[in-house]
Image 1 (cartoon, rainbow, N blue to C red):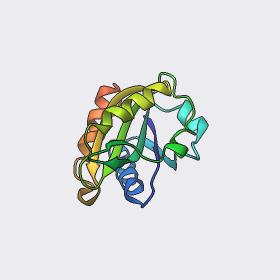
Image 2: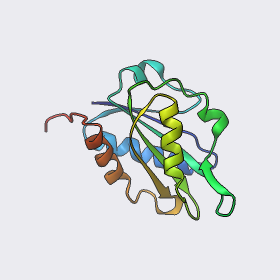
Image 3: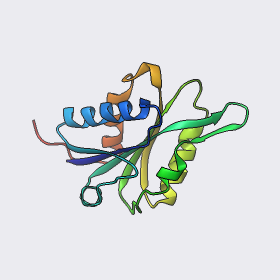
Image 4: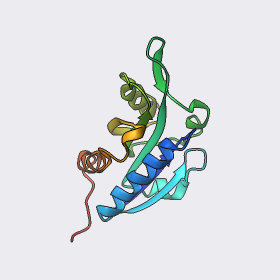
Length: 145
């Protein structure tokens, strides 16, 4: 099983979450490539069974939330029919921003299987479950033990 983890990180929290995602993929027996979204490994993406894409929650509770790092996120290549799991880090409250991330990734052509948000101070809580759920939703075949 091959996976790619792409991330957009402003302060390092989403990069750290991406590293935990990559570690969980490896623990499940997969090969993983991890890179920033503005430097995507095109050949690895083309051959991936699943791609994980992460960014941070931007905005305010009153004004609304949105996926952060839009300028770099817009550099993502087309993800036509590739199973994608989105993840986000947040500081206070994520709102319904995972839905916005899923819609954004779908506009890039991704087949979004899951999107979740993680509190930046509680990493890696929930990451292993997120990866397991994403792999199951994408029907990724894991290597035999």
